[in-house]
Each structure stands twice: as structure tokens, then as C-alpha cells.
Length: 202
Ligand code: ATP
Ligand code: MG
Image (cartoon, rainbow, N blue to C red):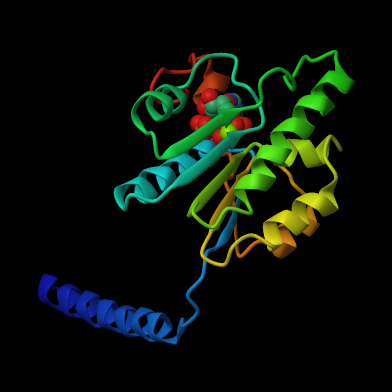
């Protein structure tokens, strides 16, 4: 095929795609906040959450961030949001859940206290975006009551969006979310012995 023919074919295909997308954009008529679940075993769930935080910051929206697992080390997002962004209410579950925890009842108490903060955010219509990072583990480990979480997510203010991240989470959670994405691991640097990188992994 000549270059000219290839270019013509590409143009025709792009025009068709554009018409399809434009038609679907036209059809979407509901204006409300969305509930997003980011799950799966690959890298990119929490980073995607903070990508949305940055988007919302661009419009000056008020944001609530709760991390249900305390990172072993400080993260760039924690440093930046706490130090530079007064419009972001950033909270990390203080003690509690780590992979090698021995203190189940202590973890449950911390999860409960942290969840109460999340519930308050999910009732506050001045907050446009709520991030519940690693919340799925609280459901998986039965640290928090699933029904209570689902109800709070469902009953949040109409204009508020919420993003839940973490592996697993279960089908009931998936059911009530508007957007569910699974990040699939194809490969991960860690498995080739490459250390987690400041500014990339934390
Ligand atoms: P990130 O915060 O980088 O977006 P994530 O939220 O998708 O990652 P988590 O399960 O929360 O993934 O893991 C957090 C940390 O573990 C990050 O440092 C991340 O790079 C690393 N990590 C994520 N997925 C994997 C994996 N499949 N194998 C090894 N390490 C991983
Ligand atoms: Mg994560």
C-alpha cells in the first residue's frame, strides 16, 4: 500500500472513531460524583489515586485522603500534601495494620477510628473528592463491617466522588462502584531485584 493510501485509510478510521466517541459523549447526560475502585495486583493503584488528587487540586477542590495502611516509610505524596496543600485533609491510620502485625485487636481499633474519619468525610458535601487508599484490606481482613462501608459509600453527597484502592475488595464493593479498574501485573521491577525508588514507588 502506498503512503498516500495508508494516510487516507488512517484518516477515515479516525473520523469514524471520533464520530462514535462524540455520539457517546452526547448521550452521557448525568452529572454527579463517581465512585471508582482501583484494584488488581499490578503497580499503579495508589499512584492513580494521587493523580486524581492533583487533578482536583487544579480546580481548587477540597479533598480528603485517608490511607488505611501506614507505609513503612514516608511517601512523597504524604510529604507534599501535608506540607503544601491545606485544602487536602490527609490522614494515615496511625498504628495498626502492617503485613507482619501481631496485634489484631489493636489493628481493629485503629481501623475503626480511621473509618469514623472516613465516614465524616463521606457526609461532608464541601469535600469534592475522597480517597480511601488501601481500604479493601479492611474488608478482606474483616476489620470493618462491609455493609457499613457500602452504605457510607452509597449515601455520600451527590457531587462527591470517591476513590477506593487496594487489592481484592470483593464483588459487593465492585457492584456499587461506577468505575472499576483492575491493574494487572505483567512484570514488576522488584521481582528483578530492583529496589523501590523514591519519587516513583514512595
Ligand atoms: P503504587 O503506590 O506504586 O501505585 P499500588 O498502590 O498499585 O502501587 P500497593 O499494593 O499498594 O500497589 O503497593 C505499594 C508499593 O508496593 C509500591 O511501592 C509499589 O511500587 C509496590 N508494588 C506494587 N505492586 C507490586 C508488585 N506487583 N510487586 C512488587 N511490588 C509492588
Ligand atoms: Mg497502594
